[in-house]
Length: 336
Image 1: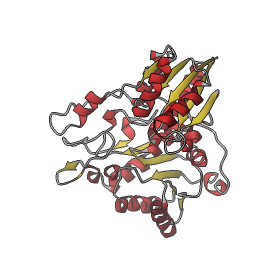
Image 2: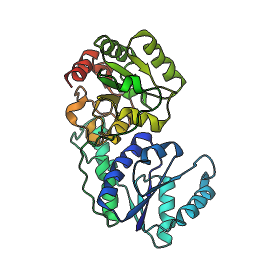
Image 3: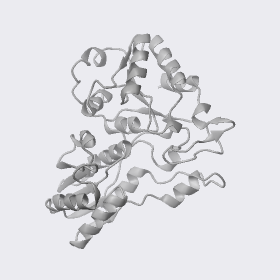
Image 4: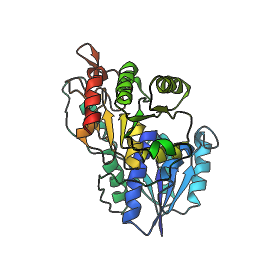
């Protein structure tokens, strides 16, 4: 078998997109083995992919700094890879690329399309057009090392076991909607007071609502909602990432920011309504197999302000994501 070393260290949504691509890559290349290099938490994304070995990078531990990367290189070199697919293109991965090139390995590096993304997000004279999907950018890296791949861009439902304690909810007859109301950057987060209205309305209409997220503050918020409204369940802090994927695979619908919740839904084949404010699907980060029709957003000349949602996006005196009302989101959810 040809062994391909794949590197993508962060962020969570980007790594989940890699997993979606590798699922189809391994279906189309039965003679390949993948060595996936990423952070330990993200190993859950790759457990269902055949002929894949996960190798954890410890950037704050034994792989910190130049000497740590040299140690990582020696670890990875022992796999004797045929080629290296750098799907990250950052300082760490480029250093490893240089070392692998030095021993004669084929290396291909992700083209992030920085110039066209800058044109899309600049304050004036924006060039607003659909850019290449990030998943296709990943696929190009494999094509450049000699592995043709054709992505379906279709959701493929995973059939997974129901985690302990979730059987009464997931095996019931009510429609089940997951909501991931948080994101790393505040300008991508639908205002929580508006999201609570959505949660309340869905509960009153008889849906089972499952809330996802991470962190102590997020847990307080979601548990408060779960205590207020019948049929609302906070899963924050109760299940591991692998089990969250198992749960999402049994949902009728997922609701997420432009964040990892959307990409987790894609990975297990669950349709996702995504909410966009400072960012825009045009940048190429729409979830694998998800559609523009399921994006909730209000077009405005100032959008988008950034690729990652780390910059404000003022639109007519308010933040871009505030242009979306709870009623708009509810209408979209209920229509599906």
